[in-house]
Amino acid sequence: MNAFVDPVGMAGHSGLTKGEVLLRVDNVSLSFGGVKAITNISFDILKGEVRAIIGPNGAGKTSMLNVINGFYHPQEGTITWRGQVRRKMRPYEAASHGIARTFQNVALFKGMTTLDNIMTGRGLKMNKNFFWQCLHWGPALNEEIEHRRKVEEIIDFLEIQAIRKTPVGRLPYGLQKRVELARALAMEPELLLLDEPMAGMNLEEKEDMSRFILDVNQQFGTTIALIEHDMGVVMDLSDRVVVLDYGRKIADGPPEEVQSNQDVIDAYLGVPH
Amino acid sequence: MFYREAGQYKTSYAADQQIFPIRQDRIGIAVILVIALLLPLAASEFMLSAIAIPFLVLALATIGLNILTGYAGQLSLGTGAFMGVGAYSCYKLVTIFPEVNVIVHILLSGTFAAAAGVVFGLPSLRIKGLYLAVTTLAAQFFLEWCFIRIPWLYNYNSSGAIEVPGREVFGTLITGPAASGTARYYVVLAIVVVMTLLIKNLIRGRVGRQWMMIRDMDIAAELMGVRPLIAKLSAFAVSSYVCGVAGAMFVFFYLGASEPAVFSITLSFQVLFMAIIGGLGSLVGSFFGAAFIWILPILLRVGLPALGVDVAAETVFQVAQMVIGALIIFFLIVEPHGLARLWAIGKEKLRVWPFPYA
Ligand SMILES: Nc1ncnc2c1ncn2[C@@H]1O[C@H](COP(=O)(O)OP(=O)(O)OP(=O)(O)O)[C@@H](O)[C@H]1O
Ligand SMILES: [Mg+2]
Image (cartoon, rainbow over all chains, first blue to last red; front, side, top):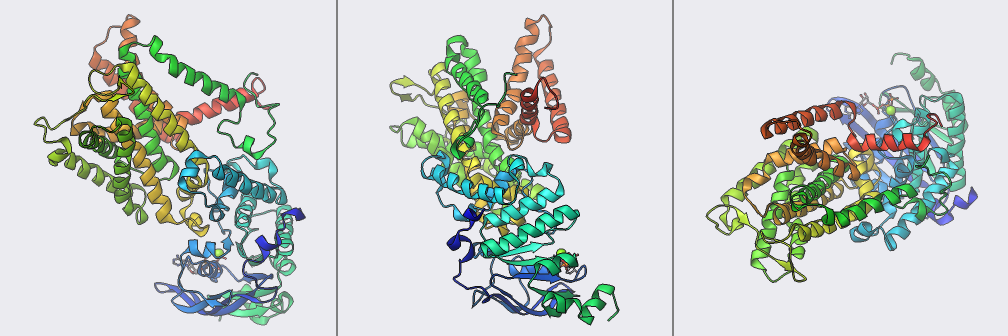
C-alpha cells in the first residue's frame, strides 16, 4: 500500500511543510438574496491537518466548502491559498490548484463505471491532444495506461476491486460514497474537502470510511476539511474543529475544547439566541 | 456456453482496455466486416444503393448526434441542418476545386459543419435541456433558410438543387449518376468504419470522459477541472463534423442530387429516432437504430409481397411509421438505452447461460 505514496506527487504540491497555513478565510460573508448563509467567518486550515467543520443543519457548512472551491463567490472577505490572496476563480481553476471534494449528496457520474469515474479524477493530469486521443495509440495509450495504474492503486487502497467495472448507479449507497472518495483521491489533491462522507452509513461502513480518511491524511499527508455530524467520528479524526451556527462561527479549537464549549452545547441543543 | 470470457485473463491494462476485450466479440466484429466487404458480390445494385449505402450514412449521422446527445447530454434538433452544411460545403468545394480528390472534400466539408455547430452550440453554455433543443431548432430553420435563399450555395442552379458531378478516385468513378453502386458502397463503408473507430477511441479516452462528466453531473465535472466551455463546444464541434461528413456522403453517394427539403427537420427527427431506438450513448446502438428505421420499412415493402401478403405501398409505409412511433414511446418509457441495452442484456444472459444465477 505504501508503494502508492509518492512523496512528491501527493504531499508536496506547494512545498509547504506540515503545520503551515495552507488556506485562510478572512471575514467571509455570503448571502443569497436575503438569506445570509455565512456571516463574517474567519478560520484557517493548516497543511497536513484534519480540520472538521461542524454545526447544526443549515449552519452554512456546505456553503463554506462551496466558497473554498470557487463554486460560490462571497460578497465580502478574502481567501488566502498557499500564502496568496486568491482572486475570484471558477471551480475548475480551484481544481487545478489542488482542491478536490466529495459531495453531501453523492454526485458521481451515474452513466459510467467505477473505473471510469475514478479515471475522471486524472483528467487534469492528462494532456495528450485530440488527435492522439482519436488514435488511442502511442502517447495517448501510454498516458491512459499510466493513469490507469494510478487509479488501480487507489482502487486497491480503498478495497473496491470487485466493483471496478460496475456502473456506479447500481452500487449501494455506502460504496458510492467510497467511489466518490476514490475519484477525489485520484486528483491527488493538496486539500481534500469531504462533505458528510459518512452520512447514511451503517457502523461498519463508518469505521471503514474513518480508517480510509485517516490513512489518506497520514500516509499521503493530504490536508482534509471534513464536515461531519457524528461527534464520535469528529473527535476521533480531527485535529481542530470549527463550529458554525446560523452562518456564524461560534467556536474554533481542538475537539475536546470545542466539545465542552457552552455555546456549542447550546447550539446543538437548540437553545434560543 | 460459447459466449464466455472465462479463461481469457487480462495480464496488462493495455489488454484490458482494448475496444473488444472479449474474444468472441472480436470474432463477431471480424465476421461482420468480412460480410460487409463481400456484400457487393451477393447484393444487387438496388440493395447496395437503396439499402446499404443510406444505412451506413445514416448510422454515421446517428453516431454524430449520439456524441452530442448521448455522450455529452446536449439535446439537439439541428442534425438535419448540420448534415446540410456538410453537403452544401462539399458541393461548393467540389465545384471550386474540381481537381482535388473528392474524398478530401468530403472530409473537409465536415469542418464547416463543425464551425456551424460551435456557433449554434454557444447557447449551451447558459441553457440546458429543452431550451437548448429549441435553440438548435432555430439553427435548423435558419440554416435551412440559408440553403434556400443563398443561391451561391447551389451555384445559381435554376432548379435550386445541387447536382453531384462525376468524380474519379484512382480511375474509378465514385460520384455522380454513372458511378456504380459497388464503388460508392466501398467508399462509404471505408469512411464510416474508420470514423466509427476514431470516435470510439475518442469516447473511451479523456475527451469522451469529459463529455460524459458534463452529461451526468455538470457541477461535479466543473469541480473536477472540466471547463464546461471546452467540453460542450468540443462535443458540438465533433458531433457536427461527423454529421457534416454524413450529410455530404448522403448527397454525394446516395441521393446524387438534392434540394434544401432533404435537410429539413424531418431528417433531424429521423436521426434522433435512430439514436433513441438504437440507444443514446452507444455506438453499436447507432447502427441498430439506423438499421431498424431505414431497413424495416423496406423489408416490409419487399418482404410482405414475397410472403404472398398483398398490401399497398402506402399501407406498408404507414404501418412502419406506426411501429416506429410505438417503439419510440416504448423505449423512452421502458428502456432509454434502446436496442443497444437489450443487446447488452442479451449478451450478459448468454454469458451465464445455462445457469441464470451464475
Ligand atoms: N444556492 C442557494 N440558494 C439559496 N440559499 C442557499 C443556497 N445554498 C445554501 N443556501 C442556504 O444557506 C444556508 C446554509 O446552507 P448549507 O447548505 O451551507 O448548510 P449546511 O450547514 O451544509 O447544512 P446541512 O447540515 O443540512 O447540510 C441555508 O439556510 C440554506 O438554505
Ligand atoms: Mg451541508
